[in-house]
Image 1 (tube, rainbow, N blue to C red):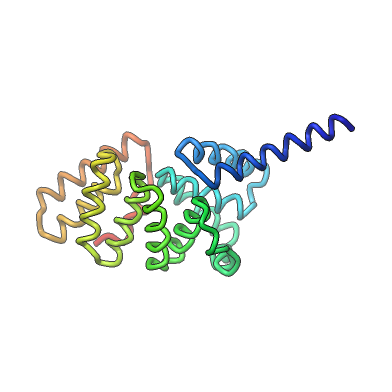
Image 2: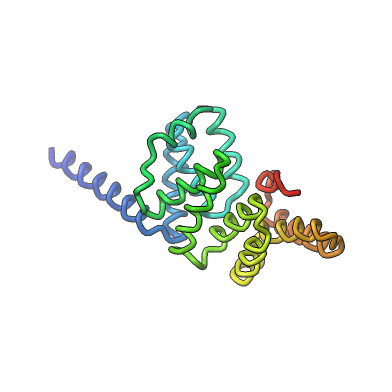
Length: 210
């Protein structure tokens, strides 16, 4: 009986800790959640909710290859999960993790205006997070708002010169401006970063660049 109470209190403490982390979410907190969700996924490999949460954490951390691999696994497991989640998710919940969930939900549903809305809210809360800025820059690129894209790239590169999305976007922008030498330089910069990170399918995020 005593052991049962101790275990119950322990699990309640863990639940409270995870809840607190979800509300605040620093980089270290995201890494903690990543570990927790990965462990949970090993126990429940077909759990769509865990796959989605893990996908969101990968995106928030800028682990783009795992983001897209997990997305593909989620869709293979439950093709209608995102559409169904859209009906149930609480958009009034303004916790940071829920904002990430909404931002990535609408990103993968290709509702870019809504995704921008939630990434902008994250940007207000985390103005120095280069990955929030990177996704925003990419989304504005998809919306053909090139001035906003350039503005975000400039800020993002001051925070992290090794963020591959900024260099890939610059490559695409220079190509559109017929600045081929500059585009080639940014292409090789992107390739160098991608190789250092060991990614294989990084350009999934850039599938719509033109």
